[in-house]
Amino acid sequence: MNGSGHDHGHEHGHEHGHEHGHDHDHDHQHPNQPDLEDAPLGYYAAMTEAVAELMIEKGIFTADALRETIDFMASRSPAQGAKLVARAWSDPAFKDRLIKDSRAAAAELDIDTGPAPLLVMENTPTTHNVIVCTLCSCYPVFLIGKSPDWYKSRNYRSRVVRDPRAVLAEFGTAIEAARDVRVHDSTADMRYMVLPLRPEGTDGWGEQALADIITRDSLIGVTEVSKPA
Amino acid sequence: MRVREAFPMGHVRTPHYCRGHVGEVERLCGIFPNPEELAYGRVPQAPLPLYRVRFRQRDLWPDYPGPERDSVEIELYEHWLESVR
Image (cartoon, rainbow over all chains, first blue to last red; front, side):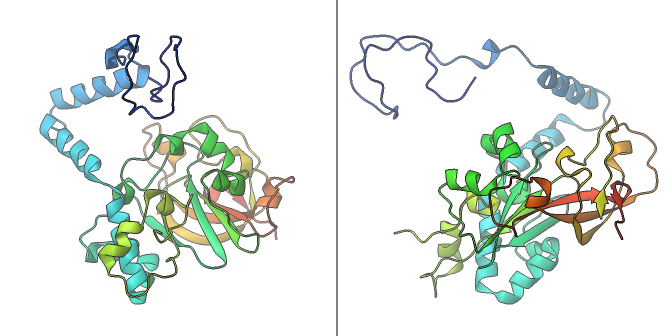
C-alpha cells in the first residue's frame, strides 16, 4: 500500500522507534501486511494484464518472451552505470568516447544502453548535473535499473526543476554557488546518466574499487560520490 | 529560440513551464517521429528534428533563488521552436 511500514492503523501503547528491527516483547498484535489483492486492481494494472494476455493469445509474442524481457529489465542495476563511470575515471580516452557515443563505448564493456539514445552528462568542477523527467518518469533503466519511487513522485519532478539546490540539499548535497547546477528534463527521446566527479583520495584505485563506491543516486545526480571514511 | 506559447490537446512533450520562454539550442539530438502523432498510432508524418534547448532558470522562474548561471535543458521538437532573431 503505502510502503512506509509505519501505517499500522491502530494505537500503539508504547513509543514506536523508527527502526523495525526491534526485539522487545509486544503486548499487542500487529495486523498482517495487506496482501496485494487487498487494494483494488487499478485501471492501468488491469489494462496491462489484458493487453499482455491479448498479445499472447494473438501470437504477437509468447509468454516466455514477455517473461524474458521482464527478467532482463529486472536484472539491470546501478552496477552497469558504475562500471562505465569507473572505466571513464580510469581511462580519459574512454570517458571521451562515452560522452560522444555512449552506446558504442558501453558496448566495449558488453553493456547495452537500451533502445533510447543515452547522453552521459559529465560533472565538472564548474557544473553539477541532475536528471528528472517532469512529464512522466523516463529513466536510464538499462544502466541503473528500476527507478526509485521518489524519482517518479510529483514532489521530486516538480521541485527539482524549480529549485534544484533545495532538493539536492534534502539529499545532503550542497553545491557551492560558484558551481552551476544544470537540470536535464528527459522530455522526449533521450535518456541521461550523470558522470559524477571522482572523489579525491582515490588515486591508484582499481576500477572495481571505484565502481563499489559509485551509487545509484550519484548517477541520477542527486548526490556526489564520496570516498568512504 | 522561443518555445511556442500554445496549448494544444493531446500527447504533447513540451512542458508547460518552458512555453513562451527563450532558450539556446545546445545540440541537435537527431530526427525522431513526432510523439504527438505516434501516441495515437497515426500513420507517421515526416520525422522531426529534436533539439536540446538550454534555459536559464531565472528566465523560467523570475523568483528562482539560485545563482544566475543555473540552467535547465529540455528536449524540444522543431515545430515548437520559433526563431527570435
